Amino acid sequence: MNTTSINNLTENELIEKAKEDLRFFRPLYEKYYEQVFRIVYARLGDVPLTGEVCSEAFAKAMVNIKRFEYKGFPFSAWLVRIAINCCHDYFRASKAQRTIALDNYVMHDLVFEVELDDSEKDIWLAILPEVLRQLNPQELELIELRFFEGKSFSEIGYLLGITEGNAKTKIYRILKRMKSHFKTSAR
Image 1 (cartoon, rainbow, N blue to C red):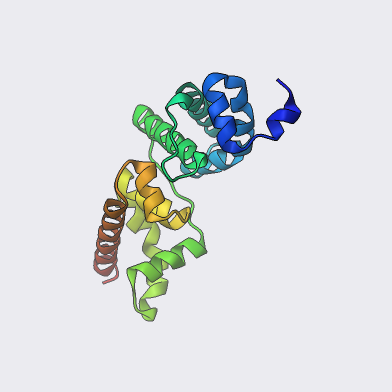
Image 2: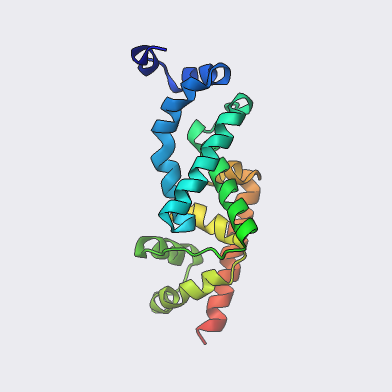
């Protein structure tokens, strides 16, 4: 296998060739490893564990590459979906609790979506970590995908195996409950 000829292949060509010869999977792995690693690390917060989960995710992707079909989302979204499922498997098996690192940009996006008065924003930012702890893992995943990773509703639907409309409905219901929880906590 000539590396020059591999470098000239499009992503779709690499995927199709990888379905027949797994040696063609390597360039896909190299292209997306860092992106998948960051997404897994954001959920696990531990570098060695993230490496293990990423290895598992890419192994599953390689084994299942023949089942990949383009459905309007990039190959990277398929890899992320597998990686997120591996994270879920880890949390189920270890019974570990998820943690989320918050940054101000994300928190302000959430403030905007929850539609609070200006006078309430500082209080919201202070109690947001507690509000997020009240969410179950599936709800937290939806909020994380939308506000921390900036995914569209259609991409969230694809990643979680639900419809775009269902993703949107669930997220807005969660935001409504978060606002309600904030109102009770702020009193």
